[in-house]
Amino acid sequence: MASQARRPVEPQNRFLRPLVPILIVLVAGIVFLFIGNVISASQSADSTPLDAGRMIPYLVVGAVVVYGLALLAGDRDLWRISTREVVYMAIGAALYGVLSWATNIIQLPSVSLVSLRPAIVIPIFFGVVFGPVVGFFTGFVGNVLGDALTGWGVSPTWDIGNGLIGLIAGLAVVFPRTRRSLNITAISVIVILAIISALLLLYPETENVLFGEGTVGAYWWIPLLAAALVAVAWVLLRDREELALTQMWGALAIIGGIGFAAIADIWWNGYSLLTALLGEFVPATSSNLINALILLPILLAAWRSAQAQTGR
Amino acid sequence: MLATWNYKERDTIVQRLDPRARLIFVFCATIATVLLWDFRLVLIPAALALAQLLLARLTWRELRRFVIFVGIFSVLLTLLTLLTGRGGAGVYTTEHMIWQGRVLGLAVTLSAERLAFAATQLLRLFTMAALAVVLPFTIHPAWYGVTFRRLGLPDNLAFALELAVRFVPSLSRDFVTTLDAQRARGYELERAGGILKAIRNIAPLIVPVTIGSILKGEDVIDAMNLHAFGTGPRTWSQELRYRPADWALIVLGVGLLAGVIVLRFQGYGGLWVPEWLLAMSG
Image (cartoon, rainbow over all chains, first blue to last red; front, side, top):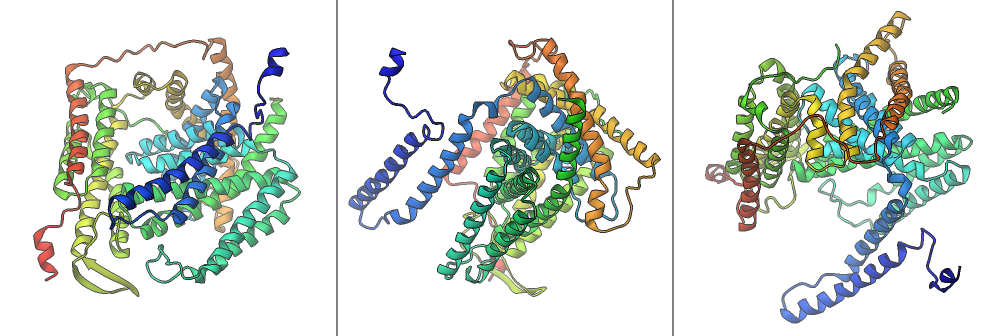
């Protein structure tokens, strides 16, 4: 007791602990930015200094991302791989491989256009139920296995993208599946979308990098529409918190994972931004979203009743 | 229609090599291909990939699906990149116009740089796919676990990989059994209806296989726990040993990658636009 009392007051809260070093690095980064500018300005007159006002937002966003990662990494239980995880990882990966192979092989005449992969629900389900590590392994290795079974070679960007789908879905286990948690997430998503929309209206002259010509001002309604959709879903599903939260994480997972794969292909395969967007992101995301959002609740309900029956 | 591994025992040079050496080589050659944008230089990894394909003595029947799928996919996406404009940022900065016009209402510009870019992109895509496609045909499914363990992956991840590969045939048997059972009860996969209905229609196949395999997994967990899994370092029944040929392959792969990195730092290996293409722009 005595030794404990003498110890300096430490922030024991796991939300505070990672904050201190990150803030120090952030401040140091900003200081270095200014020092670097001074040095480069003194060395030669024609070197353009880094625009500090432009760089600081990147630093802040980076710090927020690192803080989020540190919070998740600090949660030891989330990343533990015991016998349970090893077996579920293996089952998930084999299932994803076999099911994506099977739905490729069986010709589904009426579905062939949209249901590229009904099996996409497997990494999301394994992530939501067993956590991010199992989800990542299921998506990553499952995609490799499925491609190997069909004989399509390996596409590293899509393997990682599929892994990220499982990983992001697995983050759902961090948050309690309560009404309060649902309200907080829904409100924050709506607020973020509203801010994006407001930014579009405030700075309509920003050049549109996506479509080459024109400005972004005309698209202010798209985030608002998304916010309205989220709000409608929130109201409709407010009595079924677990379903609403898992669906939301599933949707986030697909957008994040496929977004990563499409963006990575710009560098990896040299696609143009528009190709990545129109040729990969939009078709893959929309078909996978439809598949996952329909099949995930069915699978989860079946899993809950199986759990209740076996008493595990 | 059981999902089995495409692996077949063949007495070829490729299959006598250590799988670790082959993975290292394929990894290095793939990264080297990603770094290169000069058509003439990409021909080197392309030739190596082709050599691997030929030495592995795969038949056309085995490769048909790969060639068709990768062909359609990469040609389609390359065309899309060509029509919509510049590819990877910074690969080229100036453009020499050859043709300008509208295709289906979309403004399309063809320049010497864009054409050279498209040709290189196609070659790169084929090279990367061909490098990897040989692996599942020529590495024994039971060797994946020990291969990754000896490459330095921790025991539990290597074992998860091994288990995953071994679960594939039994899970696909479960899937076929479920499909037959549902069909016997009057289930029709091809039942007409909207898109949403069609997707819901897959649930009777996916749900029993998934839940059943998770519940069966509990037995595997018990068995592994009884064998004290995860309490200490494990041994593997297979043993891998590098032989001179494996070292040669690793040196080839690492040398290729190192050479490409040096070339890139020297400023070579960027997009190559042939003279005759530039001449066309006039």
